[in-house]
Image (cartoon, rainbow, N blue to C red; front, side, top):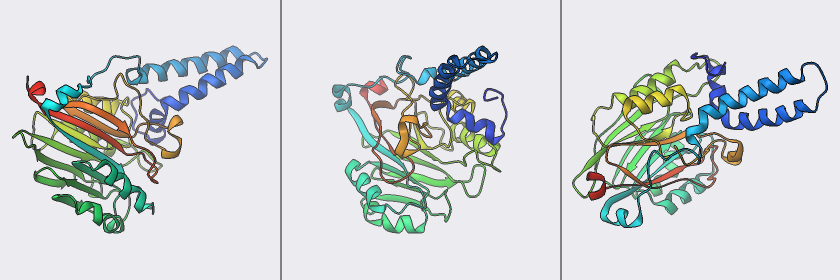
Length: 306
């Protein structure tokens, strides 16, 4: 069912959990071998097929596959124009304001994207946000507020309602000290839940990657996609928009649920386009939210331009 091209929320939810589901069906397949009965081999075969389908889908995101984005060396990074970016889904009902603030202060990113921010969250994080020369805020009382903050000059930043009035997409053109610029996109569509099939989410994701207002060759997208990188939607987003994924060839880097990432899945994405290079990429420690934040150092310089 999970490879059938349907938008029904239950089918698409299976796509999210392919990695932990693979572990589960392997264990169940072994247990089925120990059970006497006429249906034993049928069960073993079905569990085996399920494991193979899931492995096939997530294989590019294993450490055994080839890396799509090589990691540049310290020497290359020193000669380039580098910056850090941090994406944090704070969880609107979360009250661990200090943990999130402490993590932001520790990373001290040049670009910060916050999601699920209501007016209370913005008020509680006003201290760390005051360190940024540019901020754009769209608080919402439910789960789709957003804040963009940058120490780098940002021009033409705006929240766009690509598919729904309560799930904004952020677009901003960011200027680097070397005179180059790139487009930053922040994304947080709705998840597949009962009553929320994925037509709107899928349209939001794909449109964000292919219909960027600035149409810059160099671009960075971050956010909680409420989707996994191996899904047909995010794969289409990546292929049609010319995006490169740092997870490919490195691992799945689960971000949700934050307290059980060993069995979790990667809902929070970062992808690059054009001449941006990757210095490092990591999933951050638990900060009290239900998502782990993701941090990256990106570079643009002589190596990238050459």
